[in-house]
Image (cartoon, rainbow, N blue to C red; front, side):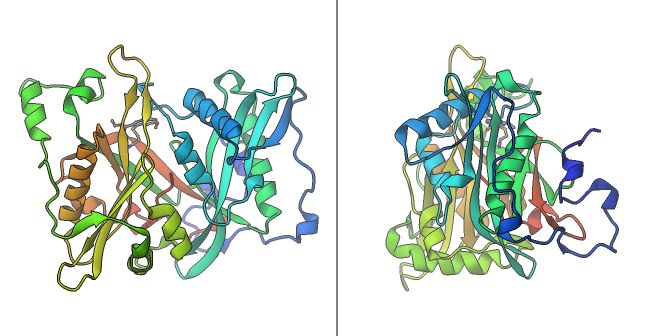
Amino acid sequence: QKHKFWETQPVGQFKDVGSSSLPEGPIEMPTPISEVKQEPYNLPSLYEWTTCDMGSEEVCNEVYVLLMNNYVEDDDNMFRFNYSKEFLQWALRSPGYYSSWHVGVRVKASKKLVAFISGIPVNMRVRDQVVKMAEVNFLCVHKKLRSKRLAPVMIKEVTRRIHLENVWQAAYTAGVLLPTPLTTSQYWHRTLNPKKLIDVGFSRLGERMTMSRAIKLYKLPATTLTPGLRKMELRDVPAVTGLLRNYLSRFAVAPEFDENDVEHWLLPRENVVDSYLVESQVTHEITDFFSFYTLPSSILHSQEYSILKAAYTFYYVSTNTALLQLMNDALITAKQKNFDVFNALDVMENESFLKELKFGQGDGQLYYYLYNYRLSQALKPSELGLVLL
Ligand SMILES: CCOC(=O)c1cnc2ccc(OC)cc2c1SCCC#N
């Protein structure tokens, strides 16, 4: 009863966990497109489906406002994600995107946008199989419409539209445990602005930890330390693509990015994504890079502050510069850009630098899921080379 909806879906079921008899791979086979339900699922009579054209300033703003007021909050209701409009356009209009996968629900009478869910296409490698998948994200139902069982119909409708494009698998994350995680990752936070994090109540001072000691503890050099570190430019896309494809091949599950994907996901965009690389000053070879994305949060109950400026570790490759030094330069760069906190999950090789760079473990999990694809056993987070926004 707990997972009434998810027990009806082609996902690994808790009852099947550990049964090595079930084969790894798709759970349900594709059907001919002509057999996919051609018309949208039924909504309660007051509501209607809409396709959100994220290229429209007006519609993009409606999605932005819906998420700003109704999207995910932490368990203590201290923060709510506040994805920017530029970020949403970047996240949803990636190479090969389908506008039809940007699904909204409006009130028929007022045309008010009250729910949203999205998908974008990705070539995902799962062990040695490359599978066309959808990354499903930004499921949001207005606070006033919760418990009307709208989320299941949103998920079914975006799945139907994904099936119509002959895509049969998906990847998604959630902060809640559903059947059945691909992996369970932990959030880690590196304080950059200790005073603000203490003032908002996220961090606390102890007997021995005074404000001045906290400021000293998290202090960083004013400038980066790696020789040859510079911002990524368009001309670097081929080299970065080569580095990243090779690096991601070591993980059990990871996206297969081509140059078009790397140009979209990693070329710096102000207030959206920052990417820096190391160019050897002798050979001019590109040997390493790091990137982080900008995801502010509304601070929900503070008179002093309204926005938390948070940076999130994205993709990186280290071949010549130690990852520890590379990520320390990422922290220095984020501090230079006035971020308050630098966040990371324990996926990829992040565990190797988190403690030494003074990240603290958060109290939230992020569960990763695959839709219609079974793995014989869950992955360790360090076996995952995938960052979802
Ligand atoms: C200061 C550390 O916490 C966050 O950065 C933060 C910010 N906004 C959120 C909004 C919704 C939210 O819901 C789970 C969590 C946060 C978090 S903690 C988990 C994200 C990371 N890292």
